[in-house]
Image 1 (tube, rainbow, N blue to C red):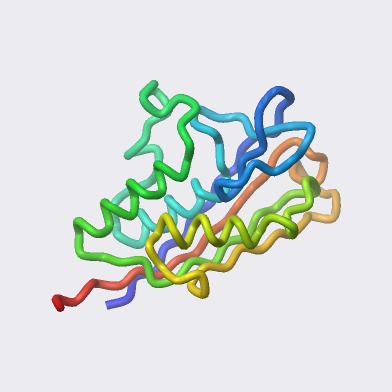
Image 2 (image 1 turned 135 degrees about the vertical axis):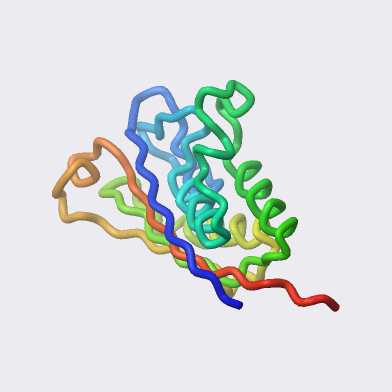
Length: 161
């Protein structure tokens, strides 16, 4: 059985925070604002995986009202989501994601992002794809006010060995 999930996340860009995307500290004069490290890409992937499994969303599992997750590395969240999937006998099959921003330029960093995601999801590097695009200076991403990310994933039921 194959299940498909979709995730979307948005965070504002602010001065005084690191710009962590896909578990990579991307050099930029602003960073993403949020309760955890605000990794917009990993949050979208978590939502896609949870959605595919019919397990709600990231806010249900890691509420911003819980200080346990304050400034937490979102790779920890992703690994926890994958563990939840494994408990339900699901494994990640593939992930395709897009980060939407004018700046910073992400192409020099996407290989490391893919490697982080593959490692945390316990899948092959060839099963992860991360792209970046702009909105041609339109909207909040175009004005540099924030960054958005979308992710689509498939998960499958793990058969007994």
